[in-house]
Image (cartoon, rainbow, N blue to C red; front, side):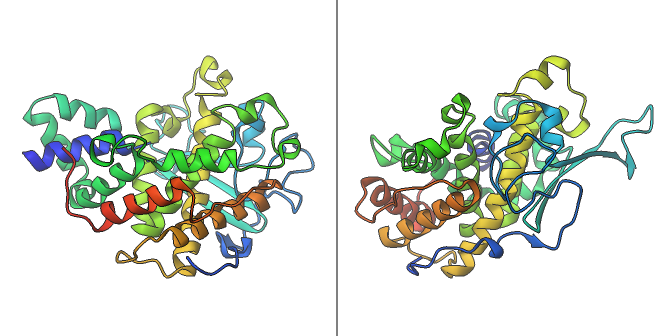
Length: 334
């Protein structure tokens, strides 16, 4: 029962979550050869779309409507193999894909365990907990890894002291490293929580989870989070109010789904470049290089500049220490 409570707690709160000086090349990211109506050209935009952002990453603050988002990415709803156009049927999954610069990522979001069910199991009775176990045996089997993701994704001052950094702090630091404000912050929303910081947060967390654990685990964490906040993402049954809500509605959430996928592709490429394994020891030099590669990717995708992370940065030192304790230490969440 103790391990079950641990699983429930870490899933509830963890859902959102390198020495070579050469930077990661864009052609190392994603699947090659896609050719769909949503393909963005080499300029990072469609000729018939007012969308202005980058390639192989989305900036939610640049979209002015749900229709505009759908002109850039593909969103298709299905039920038992049939499209949602068949009347009287209830959608059971959504396919969301982005084709950019000849590369494509795809997310298939289905009904499954959600953060809400996990919360109910945490506060409910034995039947609620058994339901979680039966619905997601994968989560049970991966509870040790999910525990580590939880620690990295959250500021754990109880374990690491005041000022403990998390994935979000790495993303925030990257936003603060932008040194071409005139190129980056074109709209007021770009500097809001739904601008660069949101894109960086999703992609940074997903890259690290993929590099350190697996793409499947990263996908599980991202999808469970999205199912909790907006189960209608699977059905497409949005209210007009939700559609108009650019900060919390389908625009924001489908952007997050796609950025999660690009983050996983980036994480796979960096894992290969730096030969990252479960035994890797994260020195400040390795972490700084890893973060600078992520920034190099953002620089290419959004055509903006950054000042680099340094191994001597307090954030880099503290997070590298935290990673080593979390990944190789011997403690549990309390």
